[in-house]
Length: 300
Image 1 (cartoon, rainbow, N blue to C red):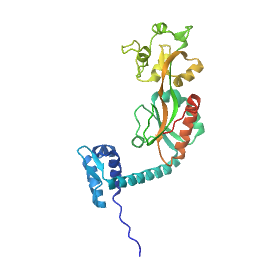
Image 2 (cartoon, helix red, strand yellow):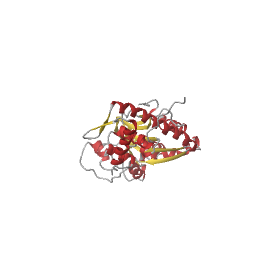
Image 3 (cartoon, helix red, strand yellow):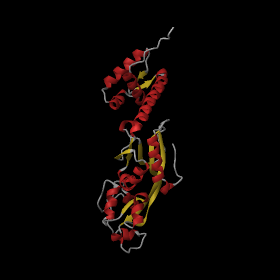
Image 4 (cartoon, rainbow, N blue to C red):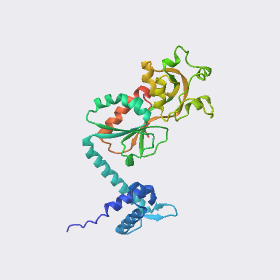
């Protein structure tokens, strides 16, 4: 006799349960799913009725999974991950990838090296997002990100160090002329200062007072002004190394470093990463870490 098969609960209810069980808050789950909080509650009620037992304990603020609900959620969440990864594998035939980097990293490092990436992976369509916002890989549909950050990292993320912050003073040869470097504090005080959103000059002079000079919301803009001879800027050596080598900028002294902060390559951990994602990940490590901090990779 053929064995009967129990009918599965509705897929939409299972998807809602997967998100609600991860967020442990129906309002937060509703925002992520783009539906009303009432719709989330209705789908959970439908699922609980379908399987014949409660999955959540309602709390004054949020919800908690019941013991059986926690076990069920772990398996349902894993099942959705498997479906997501299988779909990504299928779509990988198209070989496209979204890379999210900070604006300065994009301008100073990624864009100059795109010909190398295109030559290494000619059939891969790279979509670049320039932002400093924290990335939710699933929500933002991002495959790989580069961020200025520091450990520890979420358990769900894999991260490798590209380079640590090594801050230096830089200026155009037209500005510095024959001035002896490294510059003294007295000499620096006579030169125009170029500021960015990090406030490096305030740290350099150890002051909270407002210092003179134009202000930019991105490091790359301050560096463009430095290249034009408009003043001194402070930036990570990695962002200006090409300009130093070409003689477009001169190193005028050290501005210190933060051994705990660096630029990291980050992606969501997955048991079966797509070949395209692995290829771009490897290219980023070879291109941006070997020449800066070879051997300093960190896996988390």
